[in-house]
Length: 165
Image (cartoon, rainbow, N blue to C red):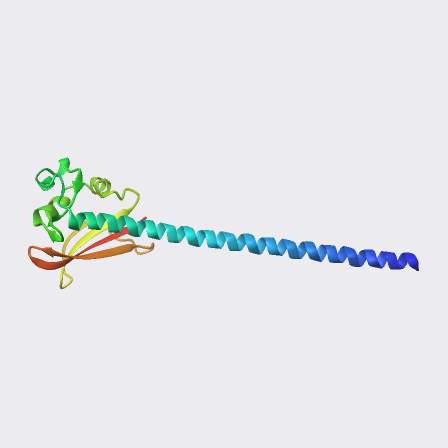
């Protein structure tokens, strides 16, 4: 009888031990899955912020700077930095035409967005596209799009830059 009690206590102790291991394992799985989910979320946010910052810097360079050399549009191949402005936010029609003469890869490099694809669109204030340069925007991946209000040929216009990976 005494042996039967010891055996029963041993079974209960073993069952408690197995339940404890099962709960600990479940807790570890939940923590690892939560960590992986949160890590993926942070990486996605970091990529989005990188794309937004790259687009912002490139677009500001285009609308605020005439480029280097200042008359780079006369010899587009000699451009070190491209800018579309004849003055702050006042775009030069010659520079807008000249950017279309550059290769996509050269423009990407000069804008400093080599890891991203882009599309640049100049629109009249009524929404009509005046000029488009770059790749077509994809429909199946996230695209970051920024706009700046500018003057083009002394008329209000909007320049939009869309970037994606």
